[in-house]
Structures are given as structure tokens and as C-alpha cells.
Image (cartoon, rainbow, N blue to C red; front, side, top):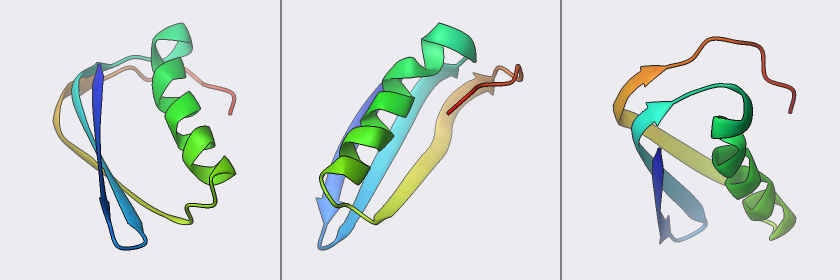
Amino acid sequence: MRISEKIRGDVVVLTLSGELMSGPEVAPFQDHIKKLVNEGMKKVVVDFSRVRWFGSDDVAW
């Protein structure tokens, strides 16, 4: 999975591409979201249109 980030005003747009698996492989996405929240970003849009498939196991946030 790859994550690209663009900031437009007070909105962050994250574009994900590749495969979004559960477990350890989703950690970079979780870390990115947590970093944005810690930086005070309150508006985050995630574009999943380039994700080929998703894993469906439970993930603890």
C-alpha cells in the first residue's frame, strides 16, 4: 500500500493505492492518520479509488 498526501486549506486528502491488508500491513495507514490527528488536522478525506482490494480481519485502532 502507498499513501500520498495533499493538503487543501484545512483538509488533508490521502490517496491510497495498492492493497490494503489488515494486521501489520495496515499500520502505516493507521500511523499516518494518528500523526495527522496529533498535528491538529480535523478534516481528513481518504480516496480508496486506487486500492485493488481490502483485507477484512478485525483491526484494533
